[in-house]
Amino acid sequence: SDKLNIAIDGPASSGKSTVAKIIAKDFNYIYTDTGAMYRSVTYLALKYQVDFTDEKALVDLIHRYPITFKQAEGGQLVFVDGQDVTMAIRLPEVTQHVSQIAALKAVRQELVKQQQSIAKAGGVVMDGRDIGTVVLPDAQVKIFLNASVEERAQRRYKENMEKGIACDFDELKEAIAKRDYYDSHRENSPLKQASDAIAIDTTGMSIDEVVLAIENIAKQKL
Ligand code: C5P
Image 1 (cartoon, rainbow, N blue to C red):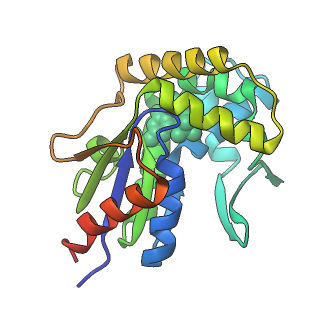
Image 2: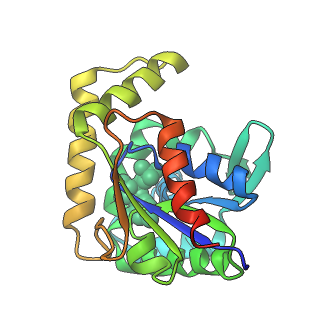
Image 3: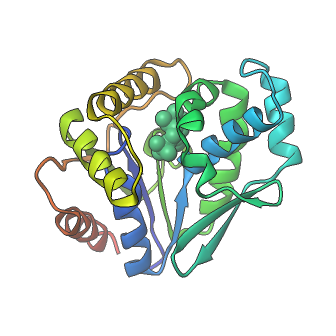
């Protein structure tokens, strides 16, 4: 039958993007990282020194500098303002400020519109915080990924070590917990499990196990 839309939500470092990318590849669907969009706006606001509370100026930034994704061999690249910002949007300065910008209603409205347009034809695996609740309420597959904050911090720490990025484990864990709290308690589209989403606690699960679980759920809908 037709191509599905697969919504994957969950807290920071819950493995959403890792599994979403694999599933998109296996199903030949398009992967959309909505966190990268909020990160790109944050990157632009820092670059052009736009006040983080000035919603109108931030929406102007989104209009002036469209965010685009490009599929490359090594994975998906993110472009904005004529620059490859794939790495830059992961820097600590962006991560520290992104939740503040993502809490703004006008910014969300603008990015949600773009996300809905990407998913219009189906065949999208989209990860974020509000995909199942707000962006794609009619998605045929809705997954809520979770894992203990300890485990999520350990995964991120290991990943950083492998990439040669120095970091402090306790600081990492605290930053993750803080971002989750902020994302879950904001007024606009807070991080929340959709009532019809299937929750998967990935604590102690391998990436392959999580991918298999989600693909089995999706195959039942095809
Ligand atoms: O997924 P990632 O950790 O890259 O997301 C960065 C931030 O973007 C989140 O902490 C959250 O504040 C925001 N976000 C959001 N809604 C989404 C995706 C991300 O508010 N759908």
